[in-house]
Amino acid sequence: MTTMDMRRGASLPRFGQVWVIWRQHRAATYGLLALLAAYGTTVLVTGLRARSYYDRLGLNACRSFTTGTCQQLGRAFTSSYPPLFLLLFLLVLPAAFGAFVGGPLVARELETGTYRFAWTQGAGRTRWIVTRLLLVGAALFAVTAAYGPLYTWWIAPYEHVLPTGFNNYLRFEFTGVLFPVHTLLAFAIGVVAGVLVRRTVTAVAVTFTGSFTLVFVTVFALRRYYMTPLTTTGAPGAHDWALDTTYRDSAGRSLTGGQAHDLYLRFLHQLPDPNAEVPPGAFRSWLQERHYSLLTSYHPAGRFWPFQFIETGWMVVLTVLLGAVSVWLIRRRTS
Image 1 (cartoon, rainbow, N blue to C red):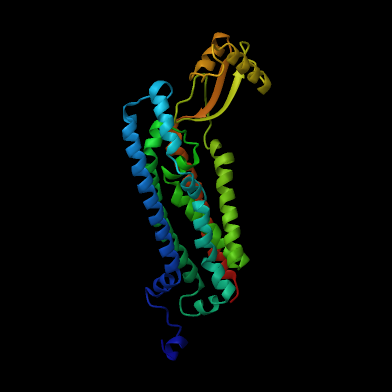
Image 2: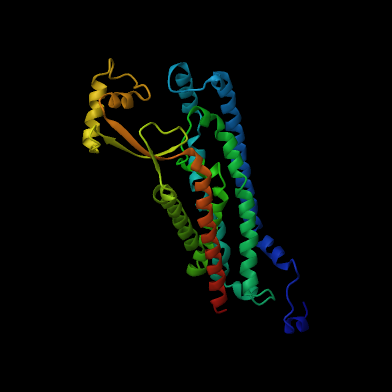
């Protein structure tokens, strides 16, 4: 660009910003792809090994794993199936992606002072931040969207043997549409943190802590209230989300925790072998014979997708708002 062009305020070429963003973030992109490749390889190797063991045990012919030979075979399978390190890795992944991609996005520019150069090259600060948010966010979404199908394939044999309700964090996160949405929200938190604190390491730490805390609060405090739970005196299904259980006597009065515990001890004492495993549903039947009842509140398995869409909706709205806050803060900042 000539001096005359600079005086006329010539803008960057159409794809100039894209090229600059690629040059700045290609190392992070390669890192994301390498992490996905490592995850995919681990899932493939352990998944094929688990399926081979599953077939050798003949578990596909079992329809129930609560009694008999199928129960013993199911225990042998589940005890050797899930690699703990992979599960722990998945738990922290959204917060980690948001912290290490979103945290430095603006904080690094503000910390080193290179933003002064970037904002005077014809792009303008608004185009500069919006382009980064859209392109880096889209790349992050595309990469993280691949994790869900891999996890769904990997966990399928385990889910057949030991089905879990949709309150299970990993099942809800990875067999639906939430994982890339959670990651984008963590990314947006990271960008805002970077604009505010202007220090890369601090922004990464704040983002990781804030994103992980948000997911923790959502899973353990907020999610159960998306819809009003149902109640039943029977046992919820394997894929239902059981919330709370209340013991009631024949007059309909709720029992305290100590009273319920005493009832269970009485039940165990009348068994032929108190040390033997209690058959499924035996305690519930014993209570009903004595005119006690168990009232369980739960979310049925059919609410899995409504819950997914509710959580996706408010997280998308929050992500967009945080992106708008980032743009507003950059526009107000003096060079």
